[in-house]
Image (cartoon, rainbow, N blue to C red; front, top):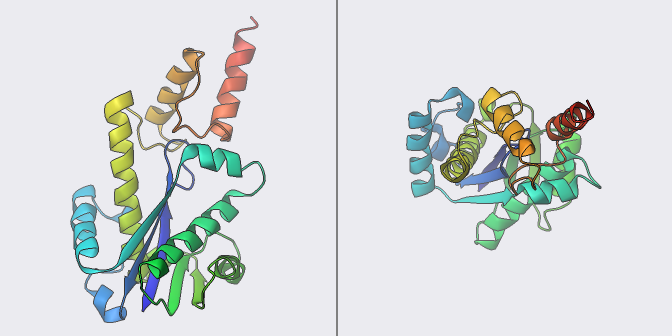
Length: 215
């Protein structure tokens, strides 16, 4: 079997990193899904394709929560965290009984080959690992994983928003996300568990707010 792996939420300041793997017996099995990155699809279309994927193909999902990301960042890079999660989701497929001969990854390292080696060393089973930049645009099996990861993360963010109010997309570039962070900091209480407190977006705003209180 072949498998594709991709993640959603790597650069987000709110919510988990979500990594998905989708397996298929061959390329033909995923060709009907198209080769479009999840970000190029509307939410409705993305969710419809996701439903088809999970109904017809083996898949696995790993979520790395914000507090685990903060803890890991004290001793490793975000790329290393993502690589570990990529390996973990492939191990989930293996544990479910699927024999993956080749795994295709959306490489987050500037050197594709180095990233593939990093993930491969953590698998614990024989598998050819191939890393490609923009693999979610190029390979249908990775595009499928991209869609599953994005849909899962979006569902997590919606559940958090239902409980905590508008969060936006969870990314630092989103004004709604920044407003939520500012509101959290205004309370002087502990940050919600789904905030990545180690993110520069948070530490910078904490510092600015601390300086403002001196005047």
